[in-house]
Image (cartoon, rainbow, N blue to C red):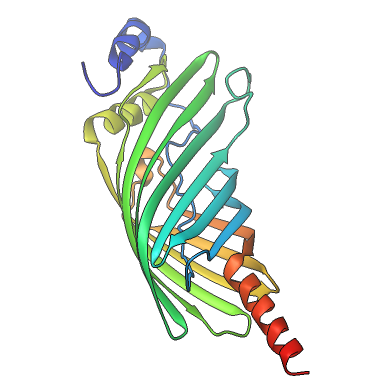
Length: 262
């Protein structure tokens, strides 16, 4: 059985008998959009960050949730969740896409001076469901392994800038499709099946402003290897608000010092 289970059996039954009625269509479907890349700033054990934001990439807005925590000295744990589209896409009569993706991982970080160097590795799973209209659809499952080196600079007075390079292996291990006459979509799904796994190199840049324990982040993610022809989005733009345990700790320490000097 091929990696995308039963996919081509469905295509053969539904597409070939009516090939004469098929037509090329302009579709808003997409099959991958990058989630924001963590650029962790951790100084010591129990530092971390918990944030939520919205991003724009592909053709839909995405909700993103990011968590980062250091349970042990120089060890970091992270988890991300990304969702585009809405839950009613399967029942919608209007063409739409829903993508859901979650990942978690561990890594190492080293704090020195005003900077933090890190290497994180993660594993994520998700799905992308495309409703093409008229009862036609595809539902592909995703799996992504990744490793990302990164560096964050903190000026200690309210500004941070982080950069990370995420190198990943993206697979679509299974799925199903009902596509009749949409030649462009048939070709894209066929290529996704046959050309996987995909090697992705994605650059993340994150300027941030700190106000008390909160961080206002602008996260930019760029795919360095273009896969536009199979509708993989090339970039994502994210605005997020996070609670930062490191900066909260700094605030408490500063308050104690002020009280002690009185």
